[in-house]
Image 1 (cartoon, rainbow, N blue to C red):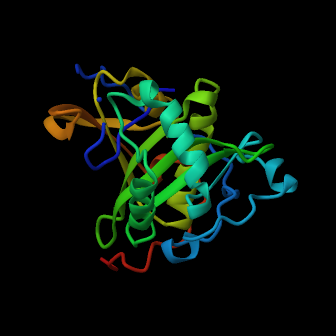
Image 2 (cartoon, one colour):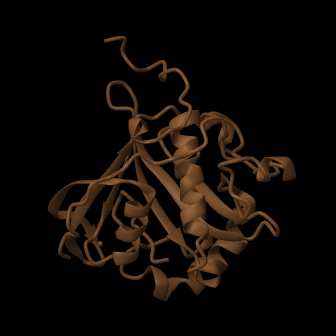
Length: 242
């Protein structure tokens, strides 16, 4: 699966046609095998993924689990980034040195962002990455998605399954109202992925992000919690009463 960008400088050239979006069908009472529920509880070394019983629950992937990026992932992460240069270019740039990895990790240990690894349930191997960037509370309750598969396991549907778990985590545990994704029109695999998951196209922005040496046009895609059948918790406490 070709990756999506970072909603920073990183990421896709003719918008795809608008399509109607149906409500995404999910089982209402399951959550992904995440550790913790808010930023401060998620940082640090990863806890074990959910046990086998959770893997059999409706709506939970039997093949992948999702957990926070941690310091102990550095070696495997850098090896995967090096192996995925051709897959990621020109859509995404990930840290490729120990120094850059440490800076990247420190960024996602701060409030307002989550970096989540998609791991194979049977081996624990890292298959992909999903970031929720620029989390804004108050009246917006929004986060911006960036995601990528890694070359050794790309094309097997792991990214799609992992991103589905992240959607559940973002809407149920983080209690976000909206997730957006900015995608270059030439990134056809990424566009196909968000369509399949039920995102709607909201617009087209010329020269939106500086990527690979130039300002690139992007399509703007988004999903709100009301577009899913997740069982939603009470609104986040930062949401005004009216």
